[in-house]
Image (cartoon, rainbow, N blue to C red; front, side, top):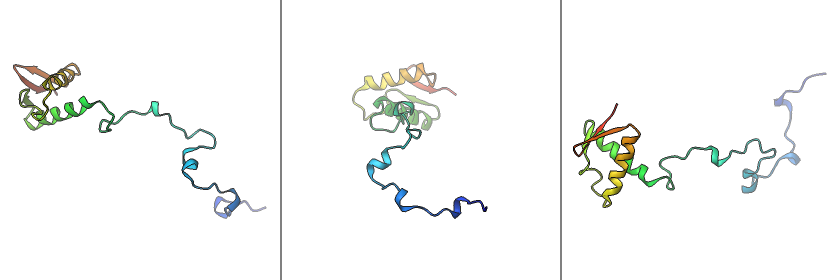
Length: 108
């Protein structure tokens, strides 16, 4: 008896599942389903914490400034300066920056 390889088996049109939006969302055994709660949220997603955008911009300004920047000059287009200060304090508590005399310094 000759063995059949996968290449020798011809597809049966009756066994094909139609490609519909519902078919792409369903899984026959559920093994391929991925829980949304198990995924990490990307920073650049629109529903992410808006402070992350500010923190990213602050970090960019610090790195462009050679490792330091003035809090006063950070994100000058943001009217709510309390948000800037809160973002800097978050970054400080995360160990990313150090604040002294109105300047923010990058920590390596």
